Structures are given as C-alpha cells and as structure tokens.
Length: 476
Image (cartoon, rainbow, N blue to C red):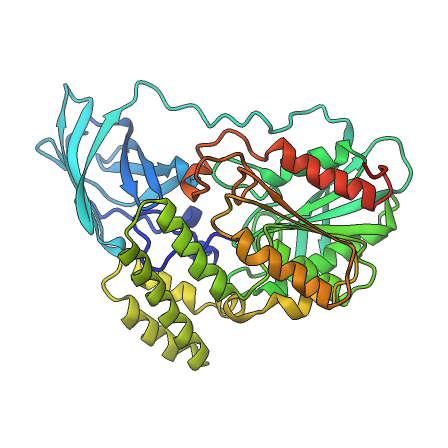
C-alpha cells in the first residue's frame, strides 16, 4: 500500500496505481533548452537535497555529453527507490543550469560556482527553497542491505512459470525448496499494490527475498512471483484490480499443489499490504488454503485507509492541521465523485476540476479513475474475511502510517470472529513501520534510508506462527 494525499508535494507519489503510469513511481521529465555546441563542463554525478512533506530527499543527476554536444541526463531519488529516470533535454548557458518540470509545477535555476564543483540555486514548487547540487568525486555506492541473502543457499532455488486462473496470464516466479526431501508446508507470497517483482523490490530493499530465505531455512517451500505484466510475467497490469490479482494468486496455489515437494494439505499465503487483501479473497473461495499471514493487511474499505493514511503521514511530517484537513477534504470529494459517477470520462473531468492547480494533477486524476483504484476504494474486506475459516495471523507494525494498525487490526479481528473463526492471532509489533523495519517515525521517507529490510522480530513472529500452525514446531 503506497497511497499518498492527493496534494502531495514533489516526488512522493505513493499511489500504486499511479506507479503503473510513471517510471519508478515518479513523473519526472525535465524540460531543458538546447545546449550550446561546446561540451559543457558538467559531466559527472551531481546531488543535493530538497524538502518534501515527508522529509528530505536527494536529487541525483547523472550528466554526460553526447557526441552531438547535447546533454544526456538521468535522475535518481534514492530515498524513494527511483533510479535512472530519463531527463530528455537540458539548458546550461553562461554558467547557469535551468530545469522546468511543468507536470508538477517545478522550477530550478542554479549558477555554477566553486571552481565548477557546485551549482548554487533555487528550486520552486509551491514555494521556493535552496537546492545546491555538488559534484561527486566518484559515483555513489549502492545502499547497504546487510540482510540480503547471498549464495550458496542451504536450499534449492528454481525459476518457474505457471498460469493464472485468469485466461492469458502466465506468472514467472522463484521456488525455494528446503534440502532433505519429503513433503514440506508451502507458503505463497503476495506483493502489495503497484507493479512489483517477486522480491517486492522497492527503495533498494527486497523484502520477499529476505522473507523467502528465512522461511526456507526454517523448512518451508516458498513461492514468490512477479506481478502480472511486470518482470517476466505476462498480462496487463494497468487495467487489473485486486480481484484480478486474487486470480493470479489462485493460479499460484494451483501450481504449488502440483509440486511433489509441497504438502497439499499445508499450503497457505503470506500477503503484504494489498496482498493482505488478496490472500483472503482466495481463502474465501478455496477450502484448501491451510493458513493466512496478513502483513499490514486492510480491514476497512480503501477510501478509509487512504484518508487516514494521508492524515497520519502528513502529521508525522510536521504539516499543519489546516493543511491536513484540506487534503482530507479533497480526498473525500474525489471519493464522492467516484461513488456518484460510473462513467470514467465524466469522473475524470470532475476529479480534474477538484485537483486543478495542484502538483501532478493530471497523473493523480488518471490514478483515481483506474479500475484498480475504483475497486480498492469501495471494497469492504469484512464480508470476505467472514468467509475465511483457516488459521490467520494478522500482523502490523505500530509505526505503520500507511495501513494503520488501530484502524485495521480490530476490523480484521471482528470480521473473522463474526464468521466464526477462532484460530486467529493479532499481533502489533512496537517500533516497526509498514515494511516491518525498525523505524523512528514510520514515514515513507525513512524506508530507503533504513539499512534493515525486515526486522528479525517480524521474521521470527511470522516463521514461528507458521511453524506451529503447519506442524513443524511445537507451541512455545
């Protein structure tokens, strides 16, 4: 779940349906004027920081002069996991570099100083702020991710392809199989919202690689797969809904049931964020789902999740109560329009009018009118959860500002109880964020800055519960 307030400032665009329309989750096209014939003295890597409502982010430019004298530029925003974003044209004249990003109403102008080692300038979006870009002596090292497993592994690793229940969709994934033979319990991992690969890779982290490694070391066969239309999987992502993703997950279940390494009576799902909504959809239809782990899953309709998410993130980022309420009011107007207008074109026009003048208004209007967002906004998980009869672990970090534990865990517990399911464990983990990292504030701006991919306490809580539920371990 990576939704953001509809008026969110520069770069932090965390509505996953929006990410399908933008490279690496961002609409970053810089309009720059044609370069003079002489190659500019600015080839190399430049970076500086700007402030957003969710904290400071780094703007990193990779600049190279082409043989025709034009600048070739790519941009990274490391804190948001964006890398290699193309910058189509550039203007550097008389020692002055200018950027313009019309789509998000952003401007930059900087003068080359410090012996050609720094641009001192001003970035403007809503309000001006300093942005000094310093030239790096060498390309920066990648982020440190100490939990990322390295071979050789004490388990088998197999690339697999299997069909979705949906016609015409083939899903590519990785199966990890504990050594030693015999039939083992199986866990299928389901990613959160937005196009993601089998490792659920974001902001330099690979949470599902870490989780799959941990579980297979504990004796589980684990299947993880690329989302439809992403990575090596086929199909269309942009038009898909959570219901469609549940059909893909059901295809994964059907496939794992055919594998001799997996015990067909001990196969279940672990879904993160939207995956925690998709997994119960399958379990509600299929009695052969043995267990569910809902990792920051939703228990209330998406519109309620989005509004509260916006409030909490903006508050944690230091925005005023007036700004927070104005943003929530805008979001409520959008949901009212979606509820009233079934025609996508009419809804688009009305929402565009509401967002007129806000940064990235057109992209956010498109995102709000996708089939995915329409379904997510009004889909109530409660009736689905009431049909789930298998054991369930619902787990959240107490610093999760995207799927709030105090909003969603009680709703999940209540719905499961209403359906008569008593084999339920609800777990809140102190100090952990939406990605189950040890965090300070829980804001999304921290995700890429934290070296830890998934807190050991979260990994242990999941694997221990699964071990007892699947009969690999005795209850402690």
